[in-house]
Length: 264
Image 1 (cartoon, rainbow, N blue to C red):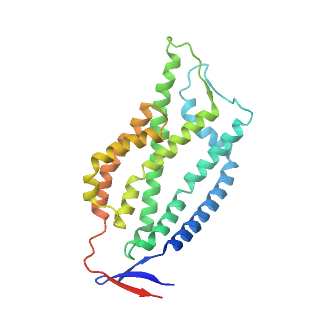
Image 2: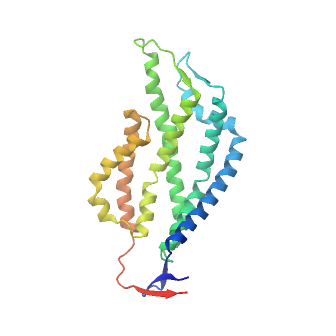
Image 3: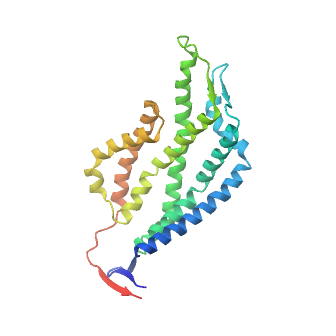
């Protein structure tokens, strides 16, 4: 089987290009590793399900008005809540490994000197994901829940807050994952800039369109309320600006001299 090898004269570094079937096999292999690791972490997390549930309950319990409560409505509700929080916790803990597998899939398209960024990419992307999740948990949730539950304390509304535990966990999980993923924007730009797909000029040229897309994504990824959408959109706009600088610093340099050789 033949691989096309691009050799850069001035650096003697290699970039491999694999056929489509090999790409599919590589994806399959990486997914197997990810599923196995997430499954193991899920089992470990399920053994600590009660602790995880208390952790995710904390933001709402701190602002619940007097007489309000979290309620189990369906017979199976708490079982599935425990499964959900265990699975999400497994995904969060597995983030470095998932990113590492992503890098290994992309690595054949990089030159040897670019592959040394693997650990920097994994650490950088993991930190960004955790910052996004923490932003949701420590900033968005306290202010958001306090705002929404203020309607219960308003005498003009004769309502009592009886919140479904399942609905609450779904809401929290959606926002935690969404914020974690969208905060990965600089890391994604770093990766795409390294393989030469995007550059600084491209990001600047399409900045206006990107901002529109950011607000659309914020509307899709968050629950249907303006508060959640805005608190996601504004950090994303800032991250987009940061991404322009990252593309400028880490983008691939133009290749002036390239030879193509065939190896068996």
